[in-house]
Length: 194
Image (cartoon, rainbow, N blue to C red):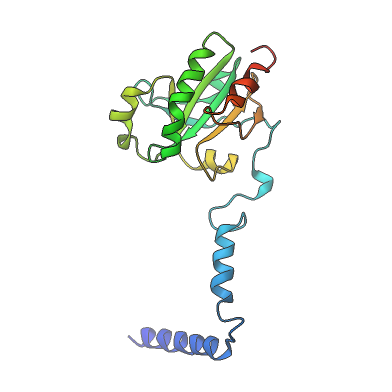
């Protein structure tokens, strides 16, 4: 009980000292600084720029959950080496992601005889939210992240996001055009040995 009274008294003194010394110019400074730090690359849950992947980097061998065949086995991007890989980063709650899906399916169909694999990686945290109704309608390779490591390494702060890997698993482009834009198909057709 005495401990609680002391903590309350000290907190009150500190707070009143802050308010007493506050001026119209600086009274919101601590809140402003706190909010800014949370919204910048050095803030909460952020990855320093030096750890973000860049074009030319070898893609780490992240482990995903395969949701294509309902078995949930572990899969890796290295399983797809030998072909170009277009990664679609999406989530079931993302309306723009769902809007891109028909365009992605159409593009995948056009390029089915080429040296490219399309893989959709969901950042949903729970399979049951989308697995039954959505997955039944979805074709192609469907994977799900196991943790935030993938998102952090690629600096993914908005979706949908399309990433292109070369045949050896190196990153060619971190922000490809959306499938609804003709530029994506044009860029893919320019790839050597596609």
